[in-house]
Length: 141
Length: 102
Image (cartoon, rainbow over all chains, first blue to last red; front, top):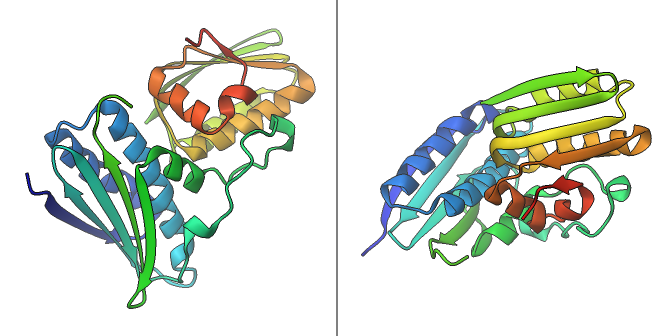
């Protein structure tokens, strides 16, 4: 089955997070995405969208586009903004073996995204940050 | 949506969490915890009906754990499978004292 593409454009504002998640969750449910994969996608999407909302447009408000390409086997979600160029994949992974006292608060979001998704990619093109996550719906993992 | 039910008896506090611990709800829990932990030596977080946690939620748990390391003990119980996987991926399963994990 050819994947279908759906798109949502919102203000890059944390207040829009639940609309973004609802948009994606509805599509995932329509395609019988397993609940565990859905939660993992939600976690990744929340991290990436909140990042854009908080950092992409420091002096102004801007838009974020959420593009979902989905079939019964996988979902590929692309987040696009025209804010300051930022490649979150360049951020070094946190040390997840540190104990509570030595752990910095934060810095886990993009690491979780990389761990929970099957593929994460970034490109900067025509003045836009384009970040894509892909999750396959296999039931075994 | 997150519902927080809080029971404090003597120096033992139990917080029962229901719903989603995410960017929009994590600050509520953070505030509730910080305003309640004074003098508490045993904190229990019951996650039976917690269906979702993002890194914003993990930050709150870590900051509560740091407070409780200084003044007593923090225990997490009834973690469901999907939340548990988030704990495992992030190493939180080693930091937190998780009761009844399978």
